[in-house]
Structures are given as structure tokens and as C-alpha cells.
Image (cartoon, rainbow, N blue to C red; front, side, top):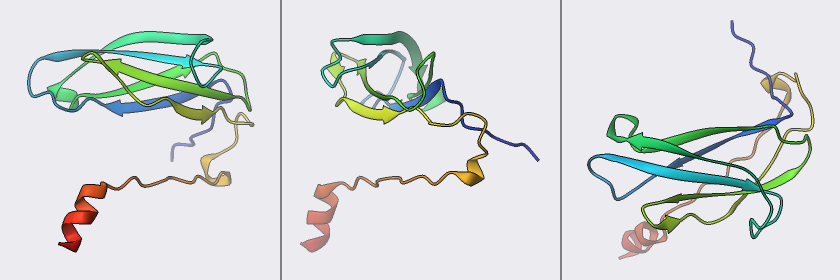
Length: 116
């Protein structure tokens, strides 16, 4: 059985580019200290394509433990909403010892359509 551990120097960022049906897409990512991303600490560019369902997974490493960071993705002339994340407090702790909360974002238009 594989034992997975939380690392105290990185976060995994994930996104999916929508509105693309062919070809590849360059996606830029940024991680910074402030909500306006004036202090960018890490950044890079990755390519995604249909074989990956236009998804991107970034292993943003070299970060400080127990620290809040802000991130954004840019692709096709558009920028994502700035997100907020925090690096784990503890390194080497098994996932089974950590509790996660995952918000579910629903499409308000689907909710409205269901009422009609």
C-alpha cells in the first residue's frame, strides 16, 4: 500500500481551460504573497491539449509552511479569478490524519432552469 504524505513546501494547483476544441493551449500560472499578485514568487508556463482534456496540474514548490499564498492562471487572453491557498503546517503527516473541506460550486443557471 502506498503511503501518501503532505509536504510542507508546496501546493498542487489545478485548472481546466474551457472553450477550446482543438490544438494546444499555453497556460501561464502565478503564485504570490498578496491578493493582487504584486509580489509573485513562482510562475511558469505549461502547455495543455485535448489528450489532457485541457487540464493543467502545477506542483508549485519552494514555498514556506503554514503560509497563505494567492494564485492565478492566464490563457487565451483571459485571467482566472485569483485563488487563495495555504501550504500545510506539517510535513510527513499521513493524509489519513488530515481533514479536508472541499467547496462545491454549482452553476446558478442550472439551478434557475430546474425551477422553471
